[in-house]
Length: 113
Length: 110
Image (cartoon, rainbow over all chains, first blue to last red; front, side, top):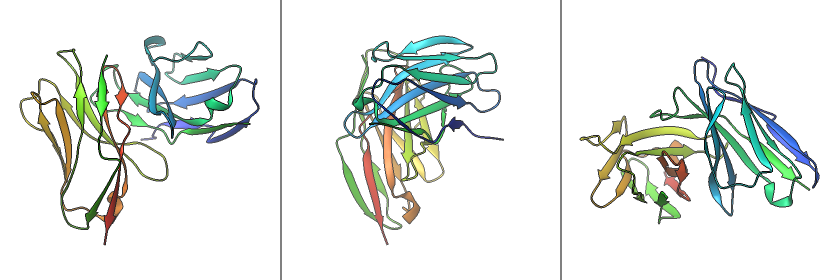
């Protein structure tokens, strides 16, 4: 059974640009959550999608958005990149919205220069 | 709002000994879940154990057990018989808010 796949693994962008990150959950999982991890702020919840609907949202500006497709794959978009957006972005998949287990991908390391 | 506090930034343990990683939480929700994850230097988060707020017994998964004290709002992770491969960051987390603690770095000495 394939795990959670995040692409790309590494990304370098310039301030002001936008970026799209992709997450393919485990087959059969319908919930996808996104997190930002930085040394300063730790792990912070961005949002959760379940069956193509955003179920929960963390405290991030509107520059951070996401969507989920009918096959449960999810994308996260960050517009007008700032230096502070440099982080490891982690995606987690679960069977249901409040499952007792979540499986994480290896993350996308975004560097904004 | 839900909050997770991990007060130990770093812990050291001798191989084969047991170690307890602390986690306290705060929530006004009567129904919640508590999780522990391990993050090795490779970066991926590995699910270890889950405890539901209504679970009567402490969760156990192999060498991992969760010491759940609801009245004290604590959910400490106990790792028995530590192994060198247990060296990693450990995070306590909570649902439904998906709040994570700042983590504890565990180093296992041979």
